[in-house]
Length: 147
Image 1 (cartoon, rainbow, N blue to C red):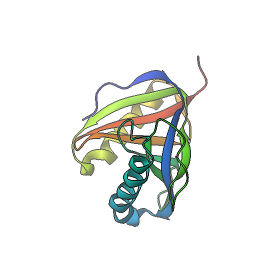
Image 2 (spheres, helix red, strand yellow):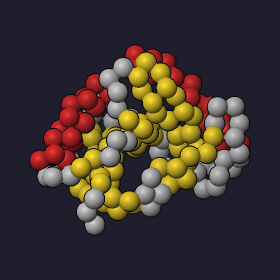
Image 3 (spheres, rainbow, N blue to C red):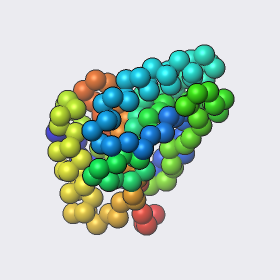
Image 4 (tube, one colour):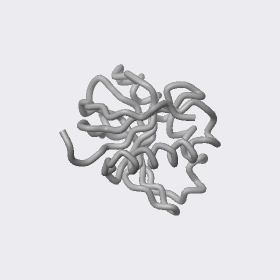
């Protein structure tokens, strides 16, 4: 399901995003149109994307998703429509690769969270998924403390 998680140190990443605060059930409705809008803007400005698209969740709530969909970019995006500049955080991050369909992501995150607790890591409130391919998702969760 997921490869063995590991702790990595990453640099902050400049991104172009569309923010959302929506009921969990509406997530599938906004993803496709949002990615299309993002790609149109960053390609028109010649700044990307420089990597796979992602969803960055600021905190996990069972009912309301407070998150951004975005792409990494080579320069700051000039805001247009719903698209604005943002950043993925740098620092210590727990990371694992999940291979499988969307329907298995919940279980993958469950296994990942179990690994964090079992190994004594204190996760931050935010997390993100990078959609590397249609069936490979990079799971990322900043961890607090430790150096």
